[in-house]
Length: 338
Image (cartoon, rainbow, N blue to C red; front, side, top):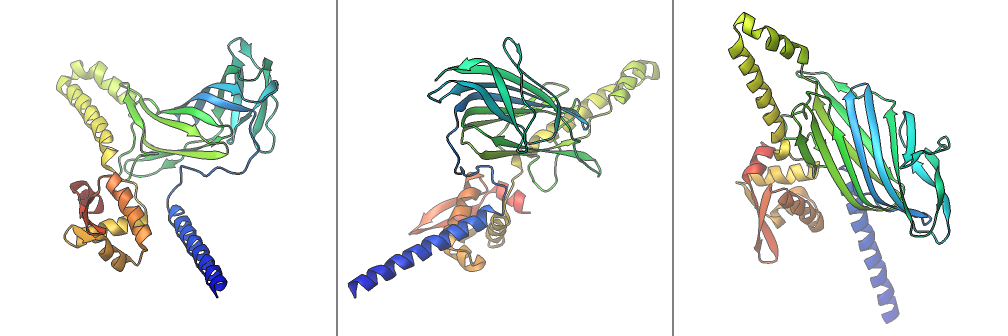
């Protein structure tokens, strides 16, 4: 009898673990996942010490990509080449080290390019090379008032990478698009933004990236401002007595630029998070965790996970009441849900 009980207990525990995993998979599938799981792969002969990618969007038809990459041989034997993965259509590819251009093979079916090194690389030695190419694609345009563009790139990490910095340069006189529904204008949201006056840069930093993982980057940006019109007013303004008008144009441009910077308050939420936030708001701005479970039908772990994400984004605050929490919506949360 005792043996049967132990077997039954083991079966119950396995079923619980299976149900929890299914629940977690269901949640993660409702939002874009930028922390991809490591696949079962053979050990790679090299690792990337640092990689800096610059994506220069000149216009909707011209996108130039440049990468500075430093790799290290972690294999016990010498290597004479490295594989470089390009998972998008491209043209005008050039690869060079500090001494000049390097030879490389045409990409295979998976997009792998074999780069021949200038000399064999011994164990624990590192080498630098620079890659440049043009994306053979167009940036999709979303028609509207105003119209804006949508840029998406998928970065496949072939080797273990200690540091990868990605910078996107928007076209001249263009700014990140401002949505009215508090959606972010770029993703991932933990980015650094730089305004150089006539160009806007967005930079992400990824660390300790596992082999065979994927990073996706999204940016929505406005159509560039018509510089010819601005030039006309700057030249003929004094003749037409529109000096005041020129000053107005300048301040209008600055106002538009500042409004583009306010999207830090926009929040990217899943449907489950939106539902929970809306329920808290509709119940006087406060709800117990148990009440949320009853209203949504979600499990305790599912509610707890979504509450933690809402708290991290400063949309709610939590106070412990006994063994559970009471949740309060913040002013930022009210703006998002309303």
